[in-house]
Length: 403
Image (cartoon, rainbow, N blue to C red; front, side):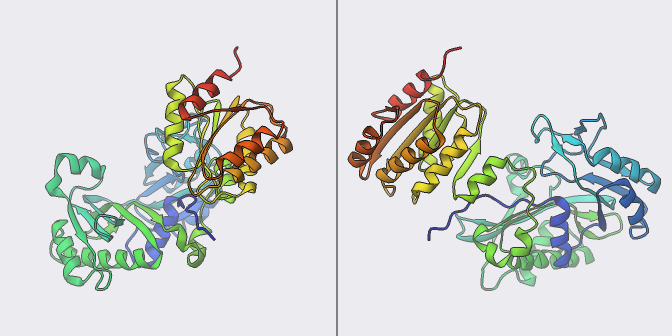
C-alpha cells in the first residue's frame, strides 16, 4: 500500500520542553495550568525568584500579541506569585492574536508557568536532515535569539555546518568543537558539549527530522539552558512514536485539512471561489496560477496523489462542495500513474450522490483518457469539458455566477 506523508506533527512549547527534559537536556522548570485556580496550586511545586507566564498556541510573536478581551501580551514576567492566577485567567478561554495567527486569533486552552532565567548570552543550535549532505547536519551559531536566516545573510561566517556521521554520531570531540565555536568557555564548554550530545541522542530516539534550539542560552548563574525549541518529526515513524504523535493538537488545524488527511488527500483551504482537484503538487500550483491569470481566485489546493481511488475522488468532492464559498469546480488531471477512467468514475459517482449544483469544468489527459471522456459524455451530467489547462481555467472563471 502506498504510504502518504499527510501533514507535519506540531507540538506546543511545553510538549517540546518535556521531550527535552526527558532526554536530560537542561530546560527551565515549568508547570502547565488551565485556569487561575490551578495556577495557585502549582506554586508549592514551583518556588522560584521570577516567573514567566506563556500562552500555549502554535504561533510565534506571542509576546507582542493581544487577546480578544483587550489583554496585552501572550508572555508575561513577574516576581509576585499573587499576579500569576489573574494573568492566567485573562489568557485561558480567550483568543490570542499575533502576526502569525488568523485575524480572529487562536483560542488559548493552556498556559505554561515557568522559571524565568537571566540570560547572559544567546546561541543557536539545530540538528536537521539535509538532502545535500545525504543525512543529518548540525547548524550552530554564536549569534542566537534571532532568525538564523538573518544571520546567514548578514554574517555567513557566524554559522557552522557540521555533517554528522550516522555510525559514529556526535562524538565528544565533535561536541566540544561545536561548543567552542558557540563561544562557551571553561566548564560551560564541557556542559554545552554534554547538552549537544544529549540533543543528538534525543534526535535519534524520537525520529526527528529537525530539532532547533533558539536560543541555547548561557545564563547568569552559569548554566547552559535550552530556552525555546522547535521540532519536526518523520511521519513514517508514527508507528513507533505513538506517544509523541498522540500529543498532536488538531484544535488549531483547519477541520478540512484533518478530514482530507483521513482519506490520504493533501488539502489546503484558501479564500477563493474556484475549487481545484488536481493530481500532483506541481500541477496543482500551476492550476492555481492560471486561475489567477484569468482573473479567478482558487478556493483550495487539493492534490489527490498518484495512486488515487474512486472513493477518494468522491471524498474530495464532498470536501470541495462543503465549502459554501465554492461557486465552480475545476478538475485538472494529467494521467501518468493515474488512470483517467478512475477519475471519471469517481466524478460521476460523486456528482450523482451529492447532486452537484455548481459548474464543473474537467480537463483530463493521459492514461486511458479516451475511455474516461466516453464515461463522462455518457453520464448525462452537465460537465464542461476543456482541451487544456488554459482552456479549463478560462472556462472555470467564466462559469462563475455574475452578481
